[in-house]
Image (spheres, rainbow, N blue to C red):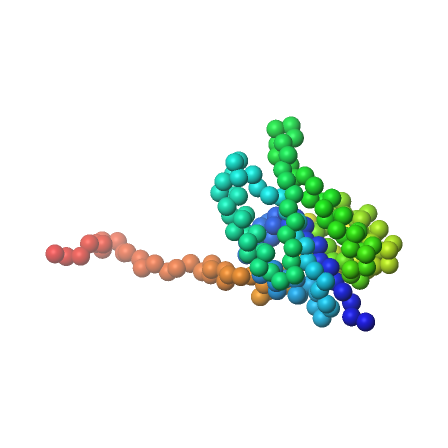
Length: 196
């Protein structure tokens, strides 16, 4: 019987890790998900993040909408959005982790998948992953070395290190070369103006 994989992406965790590790986030999600699944059958992928407040950060909201529209074009991927709340004068994400954990558990309970693959290194998910294992499912974690908890590594049946090698061929734009452009030098006593 073919193993069914459900991919759960902690969008904020992924975005910040891509930015911190590679200073880019132009990821081809379709190819990223395919690489994570390998030869196994994808049940569905879920991307969780917070919706930017348009009244607070109009540019960030517009950029995020373009990004979400592109994500929605990815086959078998659903975007799940939580909100922001003001807490002691600071905007904080609300409901994202609960949405992810609810889906993770519900789809395990209703036998929609055989393997849960979480893209996050956040320790907050460790107990939910253990509950999924207790239901007879396998658990895999895709993580960045700089952003992973010991708890989540210990609960995972299989791990995928998201490093530079993993992302080869998964970027949507070619990164510009970092070579310095050789400029003609102007020697002493030479003029930069043309003679009349």
